[in-house]
Length: 65
Ligand SMILES: [Zn+2]
Image 1: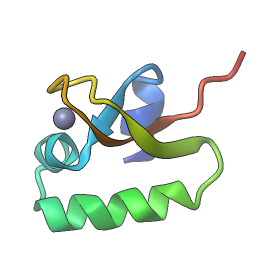
Image 2: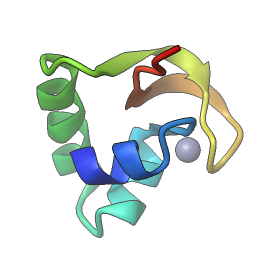
Image 3: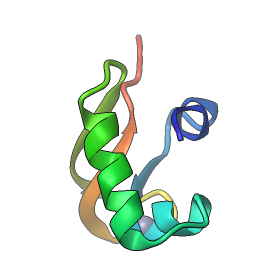
Image 4: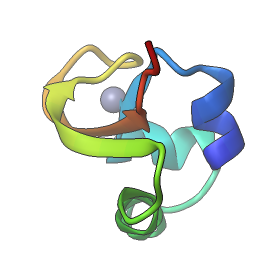
């Protein structure tokens, strides 16, 4: 999960796309998102999903300058 975000640091994904990327249920993806939110280096908020292009809650890696 973290590796996924770090490997594509510019990308942010919604729960629906995360569930597809992680090959898991959307409920599991949502739980993973909440877990990630508590970790340093990741961010969660309203934005545009890099995969489906929809505006919704997305999670991604914090971009370092
Ligand atoms: Zn999406």
